Amino acid sequence: MPRARKRLNDCEGPDELPASDSEEEYEVCSEAESVDSAEEEAFQQGLDLALDREEENTALLATPPKPTRWRNTNEDDVLPVQHPFAPVRTPGVQLDGHQQHTPLELFQLFFDKAAIRDLCNNTNLYAEAKKQKGMKMQWSPVTPLEMHKFLGLIIYNGLVKATRVQDMWRKDRLHSFPFPASVMPGHRFWAIFCNLHMSNTKEDEENDRLKGTAGYDRLCRVKPLMGQLLLACKAYYQPHQNLAIDERMVATKARMGLKQYMKQKSPTCSFKLFVLADSRNGYTSNFSIYQGRGQSRSGKGLSYDTVMDLLTSASLGTGYHVYMDNFYTSPALFWDLHKNRYGACGTIWENRIGFSKTTINTLPKRAARGDIRWIRTGPLLYVKWIDVQEVTVCSTIHKAYSGETIQRRLKNPDGAWSVQAIPVPDAVKEYNEYMGGVDLSDALVEHFTVSKKTMEWYRKLFLHFVDIAVVNSYIIHKELMQDKQQKTLKQKKFREILCQQLVDFGSNEATTPKKLAPELVEVLQEPERKPCYPATIVDTSASAKRDRASAGRRHCLLCLQRKKYSKTIYKCGYCDVALCIMADRLCFTEWHELMDS
Image (cartoon, rainbow, N blue to C red; front, side, top):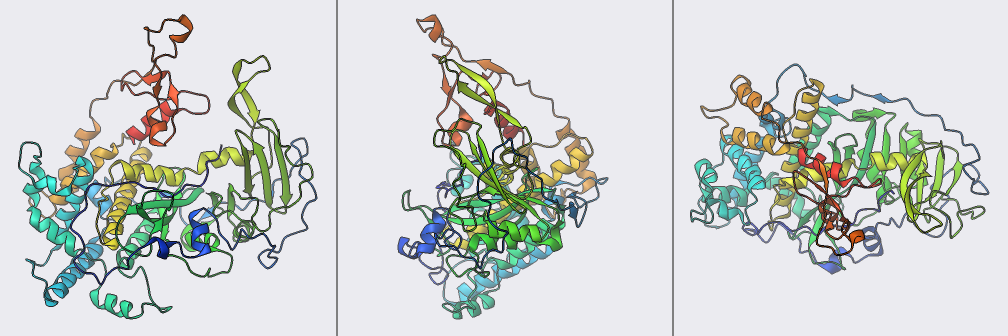
């Protein structure tokens, strides 16, 4: 079934890096500041007050007359006219596929010479400004060569997972990492990190004077690098037709008013990013950062404005199909997307303004699994479907029902359980297939994330920008290799090569394409590991014969990672990891795909 809208994460990272050097650069985040308005509280619960009011706001929509009743599957539905898919460029990587591109070259698409130069200049200006204010510290200007080495060590820390970053320079028997010390002294790494700055200090001062006015930019300290990264994300890859929009949480304890706070959970806060991703591979095509409460620019709600900002026809084209969850979905948004020649599909709250209020022929309280009701208003289709619970979806790109089925384990009248095929609406089936684009991107980021604790909010976002650049670089590598029908690197190996190339940048061992080719060939020709195969977990000590097949059940590892507690009798015979193998939940396949990514 379509998943519920994702809530805020409470993920923890390793011990924090040195705290802030200046008390002037952040606003203290408190629960009172983060949730002191009805709008903010509703947003944290997945609601948008501009669209979820009880009273009807007729100004938002200009729709045909509302249908008077819900229809059954035996009543025909007519698919609305579909906009032809017309991207501005051929979907896929926008590079010469005949050339060989190293991990470093792909990473430099996002952190190019200009971005590195600006990062060095702004870091040096920030360090000098602190010294002029009387702060005593040893500092020499950072160079582009050092910045490459610094980025290499940041990525390296995501590979080794040291409890504290400082442990990478310890020399005792328990902590011995010779690689970081061979690249850069630990005190120099800390100096660069503590002074890392993405914006010009003079522009920061001018912006700080505007605090409390409409001209104040809360993202001033990240805008320069963020803008360069967004341009690169759009320039070097054209998404395929199916896109997903969802939130991404970046956990932090940095002190800043942009964070989201969950009262019912631990006091960990997070930055919320709105992400547009290619459903095919998880490539981050566009993103924005939630900047706190404020008036909706269009008057139609934050969720409406977010989607409209992420979908820019100048860089995308038209005819795209966009999938989203119930925080974003609204009749007003889908009508306007249809006018802009975009198709859309998403779960929807039934209290959204414009949703049909009729209850005639709606689903009964005790409807059977697979029961469907639908209603159409122009190009907007609303469909209700019973699975474990009732699911409501809105779509402008699907018919109500075309005979599709899905496998479910149901109880027969005689009490026995069996796998049966039940009807499923087209919109629900394709929502399940294409909505996971951002989740796939998140999984690639979280495997080897470079994120660390830091008390400066903009440095936390800088580390996430590095994550986005590395993951997008890796996805481009996979697409290029698959187009040439060659074996792709695993993400870990890709990061290892990238790390070495960054720390060797500018040295005699600098990896030019010709010199690196043998290394890449060697990696691509690594011996295949033994094939994975499903096996049963059997506890032969069970006394009753009928209990032996299930007595040794273990918790599925993938379900545990998703905070679900499902036990299974199956495991991977090679990896010795318990994984579900069910008609509606193939954790065995999904887990191995994630490990191979």
